[in-house]
Amino acid sequence: MFKQIVGEDNVVDVNSRATLYAAFLIGVIAPEVFIVQPGFVQGLVQYIGFDEKQAGYVTSMEMVGLAVTTVVMTFAAHRLNWRVVVFSSVLVMFIANALCAMTTDLQVFTALRVIAGLGAGGLVSLGFAIIGLTRNPDRNFGLLIMWVLTYGAIVLLVMPSAYSMIGMSGVLWFFALFPLLAVPFIKHLPTNGSTSVQVEDDAINISAPLKAAALVAMLAYFSAQGVIWAYLFLIGLQGGLGEQQVANGLMLSQFAGIAGALLAATVANRLGRAGPLAIGILGGAACLYFLTGAMEFLVFAVAVGIYNFAWNMVHPYLLAAMASFDRHGRVVVYAVAMQMIGLAVGPALAASVISEGSLVNVNKLGAVLFAASCLLILPPVIVQARQYRSRGVF
Image 1 (cartoon, rainbow, N blue to C red):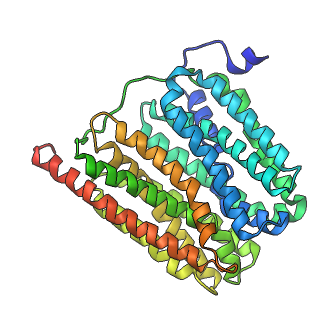
Image 2: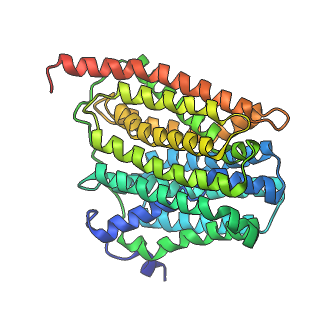
Image 3: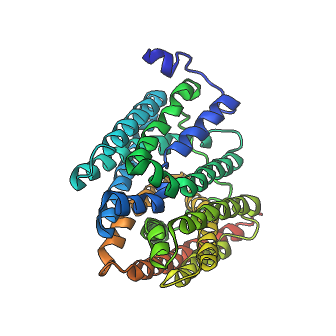
């Protein structure tokens, strides 16, 4: 049975449709909870009974589990059978989510979310790794982001109705069963990947302090995302909007995110990276001003739409910048780890600043972290571009 699932053919064409579809599927399954985190937090608060701080810590601990596995896989993936890892990850996600549907105890629920995150981390690592091996990774990463955001838009849209019809336990059962869709496709995945490093054409070895600043910028940026994203649903509710209105706004923002990702893929480095990064990071921070206090649906929808557009435009520029900071691919490896750590600690940081149920401090913290990331990332990006031009490479 196990051999039938993982397959016996160790050689696959990573550019075949079967392998690409399998990679896209595990890439969508991996962030199944994170990409709808605002709706998930709402369920924890309104349907399980956790308060806002407890919900923040729960989601943070799930991201800790995801971050741990991602970091471990960064160094261990080449020693493991990828099909076995995917099957094990799917099984872990199924068991953890199913058990979550059977408990409302805070400690037990939190521990199970950590375990679910550990499983999701395996899929995140290998989904990205497999797509990175394909003939056209830029296009395929764009398609993956499109499918992830499409999944998020649909699930966020139906979450309020799902809570009314099947409750939080029913939603958790969906999160348990959805990963099982990957099982029939595992045999189409490669068993391992190439150990060669793909180096960016404009890669330059910049100084160690600038590399450190870039990595701290990555940590700050994704900590800010973790701070804000987890609480967007509750921010909308505190602004006086209904559950379905908030869900509709977040659903529309996912399509704005698709546009941001496609813009980055289309424009690429033609205009440099400093400008798009500054505009995207500071533009996302500016949106938080309009997500404070009472708000109309149109204001919420436009603000979260621009916010998600900026996020998904900035993300590929950040990764491309990290890949250009050295000739050995080490910085981008560490940057992905910083990304996952930031997303893990963000919700906990947000929970620590909530005062008497008010989420105003959450927005302020997010804005400060965004500003810090912008100040930290621009010097390395500008220096790298200057050094690249000085070598006469165009």
